[in-house]
Image 1 (cartoon, one colour):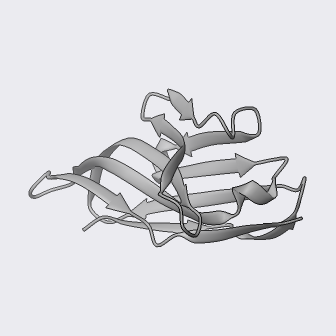
Image 2 (image 1 turned 90 degrees about the horizontal axis):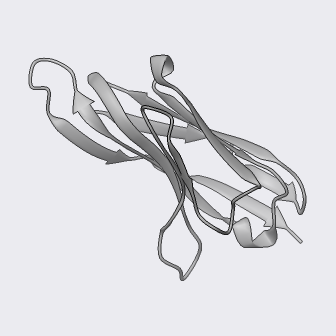
Image 3 (image 1 turned 135 degrees about the horizontal axis):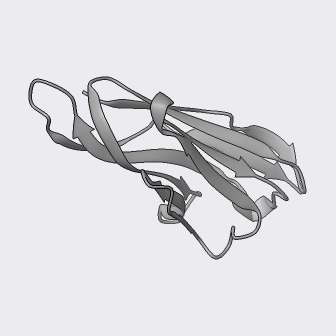
Length: 122
């Protein structure tokens, strides 16, 4: 079983910065995609940013120019650098990963982390 653990959330004032980390562990052969999603109370979970194993990135319009996603494939880790934070960014941020597990089965997987809370005060 592949597991994801997020960290780096917390309380920050408007205009501040946070860096989220997500580490994948378990039997992993390859990770094709890792992404960050967020869910605020009463709202649907939405894509914030995603990155492929080749480094192609995708961002929600609301965070373009403020957030940067990056990855360290050797460590099976993805990061989300969040700058110029706004109260609207307040949400639980979830890490997502898709890829193939290691031996013996080499099964495809798609897993979610537990989430880390980001609160931006006004």
